Image 1 (tube, rainbow, N blue to C red):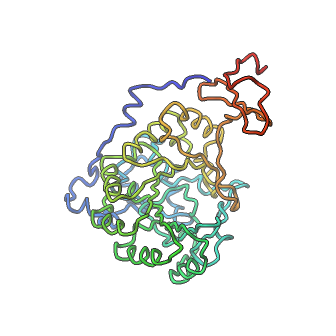
Image 2 (cartoon, rainbow, N blue to C red):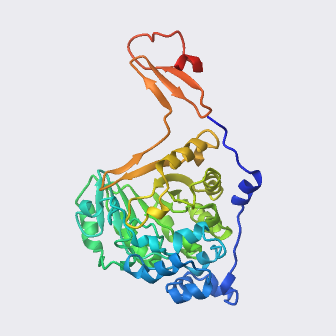
Image 3 (spheres, one colour):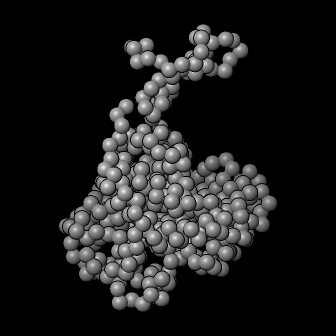
Length: 404
């Protein structure tokens, strides 16, 4: 295997923590800018706002934004909008957030519910696909809307899905199923709730004896780090063991503000993991992905999953190949600390659940030995645990000529 080449200057630049300031909102007071409610109230949600702030819209972006309300609404917080490079059509933030005409093109294999959540929903807003855990959908709103959203049928209600979670029914189901030990709050984004509403939900769940731990899936620390207040962290601290999974796809998203927000969560004793989606012309690059994973660790976040982009309708222009994903995983394993290496998964279409995908490190195996390859491409044999004695003398490295 060839050693992965990278530019030291580029690698350093990708891992720098920057504060992008107020940008277009430079006249806004410090108090307002750092108020998460002000950020939500002043989101970019219309074509007119977008054109005024970014006159460099391409024809595909212009047409896509005109049609956005038919599939998934446009919404970007002022803070996150400032990360967009208006001069670069392939800016990784722009690619994720600005609608494009390609979203209206649906390939034959794409679907509105690629993970089969609706078919595993015993009560509205609850998905029970795995034996001991449930997905508790609490809202259809997010601070900003990712154009590859797996739940675009539901999120923002642009498609008329008419999502109305019924917390009492959802919680009653959990209470009646003692096999459920793990509840993941998601949506939409649970951290859009007020502290009081979120505390009420977490209290109800924590009161169920067989629920061992709680999780929150959120992109709020990335889109809206102002939301991660000391008061929120103090409230969440009551509900340990509580885990938070964030969602960051590119090192540019990990700013000074985000690092500090994640630090507040960590200081509250909350373990943090990151779920990253492999996206074409966003992070399907070895240097970018390695920098992203290393920078996450600097924010005290463990890279958790790298997702192959789901087969959501209208996402083909953002979908990188599985081949590229395997190439990236190959370049991470052994070339950086193991803490940087996420599990690469494909959510099996139609509701099959997460299937781990990794490069081939086991080359062959039989009753008495396993032949394995390391990150350098060197091959070794290892004795299989068995009642008998292996037919070879001792574990060893295998010469390339022996494999022919």
